[in-house]
Structures are given as C-alpha cells and as structure tokens.
Image 1: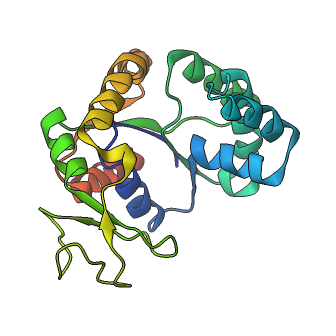
Image 2 (image 1 turned 60 degrees about the vertical axis):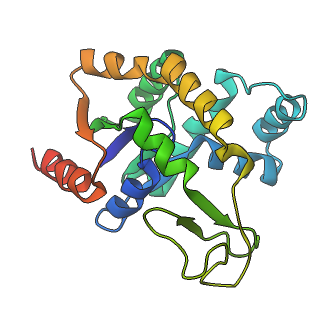
Image 3 (image 1 turned 90 degrees about the horizontal axis):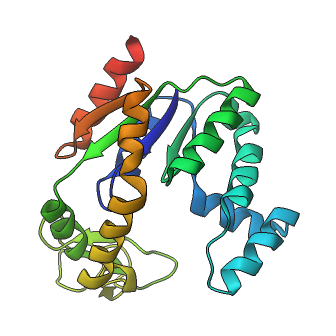
Length: 215
C-alpha cells in the first residue's frame, strides 16, 4: 500500500491514516516529521533546512525532496507508506514522481478527502488541546467534549485553543491549501490515480480505501 492523502487542514487525514495503519503494514510520513527528524539529528540536510526555518523562510522543495527520498528508501517505507500532507504543490508532486521511479515504487493511489469549508471550520474551531506538554490530549467541545468543561479528562490539565486554531489562522490555512495544494486533485485525476471520498465518516473512507486496494 503506497498512498497519498490529500485534504484541507481539518479534513481528517491523520485519523484516516491511523485507522489504515492498524490494518496495513506501512510508514506514516509527513513533511513536518521529516523536517523535525533531520533537524534534531543534525544531518547535513537538516542543518540546511534549519537555516531557512530560523530565518522564517520556506524550506526549498529541493531540500524537502532530498529528505523525502532518504525517508522513502528506509525499510519500513519500502513495505508501504501513507504520505500525509505531502506533496503540497505540483512541483513537489513531479519531484515525488521521479523519486518513486528511482526507488521502483508504484503509487497505489491518491485519496482525496472532500469536506465542505464550513464543516472544517466547525471541527477546528471547536477543538481544545490539553496544555500539559506531556499529555496534549485533543477534545472537541461539540462532538467529543471533556467531562468537565475546560479540564482534561486524562491529566486534569487546562484545555486551550492552540494559536494555529483561531478562526483567522484557520481561514488563512484553508486559503493557502486552496491556492497551492488543491490543484494536485486535478493533477492526479489526469493521471488516473485519484480516488475521492466525502469526509463525513472516517470509517467509510477506510472501507473505500480497502475496496480500492482489492482491485
């Protein structure tokens, strides 16, 4: 199983990935994890990326693709992977395609999770995260509220709204997605690799992906 998950912030990509990983041997790979891993390990690529990050700039595609190539060559990714949040642009998708050819990997499919913007806003703006750095449990005041308002069930920590989950920030993230990442839907559709699923039910998406894998 070699999958790419596409979807706006809050579409449920992480949830779907976790559910699929319980059923299939694969590596869950995100750009953020790769960047943090290389920076923490002090690799040559990580040091180059850190320079851009410290200056508040974007890490160039060439660096990200080099990190991704290294990650996809690792043993766990060779038996399968789920790419979550990568690629984000057409140039990244083109670079990824070349990497997969070099590694002899055939993409199983690209799963696009379609969720209306208002639903995403409701999901994210209703989220609360435990402020305890050792816990960081996530709740939703509408769909999965804590037993006591504002208090984490697990550790008793204070529940907060993360800085990147305010309405202004979320709307900006959705605009960035629409401008930069949404064109990937047409890109992979033209290649015959796209599979679209409504995002209301993670269970239904997982069932749909499993049916796709049987073909």
